[in-house]
Image (cartoon, rainbow, N blue to C red):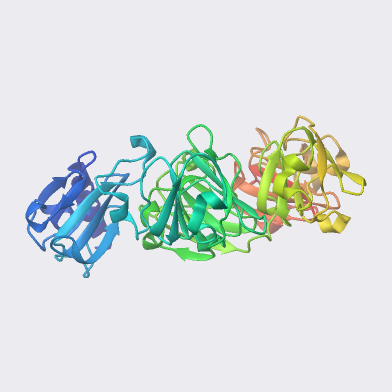
Length: 495
């Protein structure tokens, strides 16, 4: 009986969506998009203008990039709530209680940064970002209170004026990157609007910074930092964003990001299991710059975050050396290609580096203020072990021309074997990420040799995704762990 009802619901839902018109919100007087309907373009509508009867709204369809704000009194009065996605049947608090409403676009890259018939002042005080081509700093959360617009370029305390050290939310237009600094010289970067800076520990801290184009289409190839999972509305960690700690999250928690997530930042040690409206699910253990790669773009509706941030292996980052302010590859970070860099290039990271990611085959020579130096050939999760915590003032980086892949040294590679007891065809995996272990090895590994001082995280899908397990010693029969002939990608790192 339940399956029969679900089929009816699915048919009705699809039928309702078929009536939707581009750039128009559809209102229905009955649930499941049934009954009398009206189609509204962006604008403000009194009870007499909604196209359906007063206090009869029961369901509505909202196209991507639009939002609907409802009021329980005419002339936009009384209780209000803003919806960012379709609702097949309003709950008791709103069903048959809407007397006026407003329809508007949100910040959607496809319409050139968004257009709205509502002024910024009317949008403020909600999770919905304002619009425009300048960064807007707000004294209060949810884009409300006193504000100031800042154009592209550097800005100082004098430019912020009364807002210096008093900023709680910030609107960032699509395609711009905001770099901020506090009185202690600490730095951070945002590529999407933030309705509450407190979730990143930056409430009332911004005193200066810079605004710059984030690159083609906005965003960064380098994931952001921090100990929270961050969902983004656009690829490459750009657009509107929300951060989450461990636990489950619901459609209501996602708000405007419901079925509108295109990239995810996942700190080392955390796992994100996501679900869509069709009960499909997928597990991710590393940051994903473009969910379309996994056919999950604009699908996430709920999920669960588990694990312990900072406890996992180094997440794969790319083909550049990355310096981190904190240990375990966390905190503010900056990436560098091969070359020589002095204190000015390191910027706020000079004498402030605690861990380093080094791609496989690369080496770096670090120097301190007293002239001492040391060379590292592999990633360092805690520089304090080597007496170099917060000591680096300049670096020289040499590229080995490799990132991940199979390494040459027997003592420095994890070896994968197609048969138990380290027999059969072997695949040598050097330090770093191997997104696909290759034909003949994929889903055909039965034992693993792990040299002393190394560990390997293996995944049952390519691109370091899906189920995973970490081995810190050799395994002569993977069937013991339920992993025989299941490995598709690996990540090798030093302990």
